[in-house]
Length: 261
Image (cartoon, rainbow, N blue to C red; front, side, top):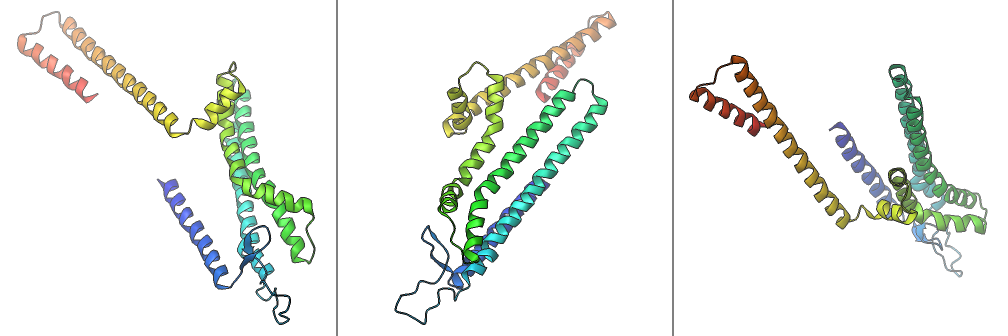
């Protein structure tokens, strides 16, 4: 419940800050063409207009205030959070080794899995935003970014969501590969990336409902057997046959137990 409350307020804060920066840039006349896309850029001026100053809106400064600095603050916070996750898991595994025997390799494997996942998640942000930052820093000091930096910026920046998707699916793929060593890579990828589709989820949910129903029926039969065994054993210990009234009462008690379960 606490996590849901924090998550709700996190969404509200992040969306509010983004909208505030967006409307502030609109009010300051900061959005213009930057050749690659519409972004915070210089004021377009005609060659004949000598009084027009493209830098009059201080677009380089606002690029860092509204975009560059908030992005790297988020990346820094994310890096610290992932480091704390790894540190927490590692400490818990070290404590568990004191009370369990033969789990050293399993604990080490879990810690390594968490470390790899955290590293991949953080690396995707650094890989995506390092080249746009270099490009903006060179432009801020009057330089011209090389073609390689511009190319990597336009290539990696739109792919951030796809890279995060692959990283999110990586543990699922590893689990499928471990549980199904004989299947091909294509089959494992199909299960990994397409099992979240609606028609897959409906079938899985139906299977899960059938399994839960089977478990509940099994528990019902088990409860009934235990109740009847207890009643018969109690009657046998008394070495007398119960009268009709007592037998009827015993049957009602058994039915009540079964209904409660």
